[in-house]
Length: 327
Image (cartoon, rainbow, N blue to C red):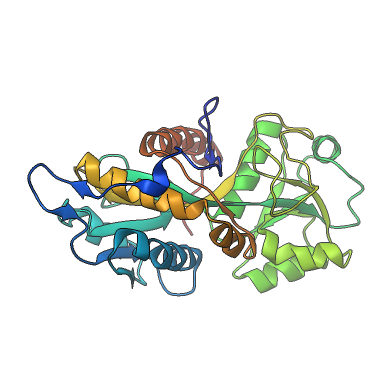
């Protein structure tokens, strides 16, 4: 996903937003106490996933800047984290760290929250490109050639994906929609089976996470065509983008972002944004994310809100047109 001064697709710039952020002052609410005056809680998904990884890096990094401990509160069941944060006091001490399933999920099935009305965006934290890969037997070397092949053989090419509504699934369906091609989805129950199907030639292509395919690319078992970010990514140096090599305007990126309950005072949102943006500009934090195949990124609250609305419109159409439901 992108947010920049000339676009609203969800992929934020990694530059620091504002020169004076490192000297951010404590937030005060009217004549009330300085914020934060006690530990902050990051409520997020279960231990071991991308949201947990992201939360722990940011929580540790901002603690010294705000002078308070930041606690990561993992919730294993879908909906628990959003429910807790949406019902929390609007005082900045309970914050949600989540991925785009937060705003894509309600497009796939009814949810007990509204991502636009029940939460206040704080900042984007990071982004992870997908990589468009094909099996070596597929005689293409660019997105243009892949689209031409798919159009010449409608329904004969297969793509692998995870569960319905997953990043890999929606990336492929967006590609099909924008490219005007008919490629058949082959869903897999887990990543191991999906990779075996892809490297074994059972399927011909996938929009995959970098970490899952880099070893296969280096070994020659897969061929990488492009990354799905709007600009080339340091995660996959030297690899062009889908939009630059055959499908202008295409972008599909996994991201994580921070939200507070709706109605949280602007001074608190600003303090959280300032401190998070400051640590995301640190070279050690950038390297921690990059080593996991992720780019540190930041945004203003308005940029994040605008980008979410744009992506919900774009993916909402793809989901509706393709008849996608959760399986």
